[in-house]
Image (cartoon, rainbow over all chains, first blue to last red; front, side, top):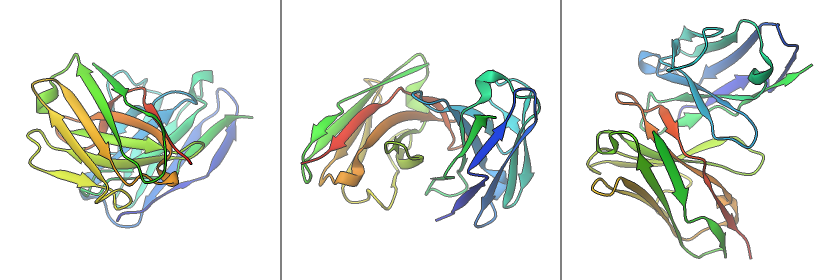
Length: 108
Length: 118
């Protein structure tokens, strides 16, 4: 099983600031098969990024993804009020899919 | 694209429950489908996924041997049969459509809550 470790657990920032979220895999992900999701409390998750760096349909360009191998990053260039949520990474390199534990992005 | 889950509820430990997911607005028969769960206040946990023709089914170790995923492409529906339920199976269960080429969760339902308690 590939273990994904996200950091930090909680990130406190203000609107307009830049957010950097990290996801580390316990082994190399084939073809950078990593996705990012956003979950607002009480709602279903929403797909943000696939293949580590490709925005899903309708995702604003303030969201960007980077990384390869075992280390991946989700960056939000300038936080909007609606961006404060929990973010999860997910690997699909193996048939046994796994998620990271999540990073909570809260308003400072 | 829309996914609507049903079948959740309160069930005793050791008992069985079947969840359903109705799909509409997309080409259901040509996408893999999955179940993902989230225990109250916890993170996301992948449960199972099934390929287009049901030729392959994959399960998380925590549910393998107890849960069975199935689909009916004529009815655009997905199911999850859960048996031997345990207290730690208590969660919101989401149905998801996977990407057309890879196993990321592109479309999500709103979920159905399963509570296992005596």
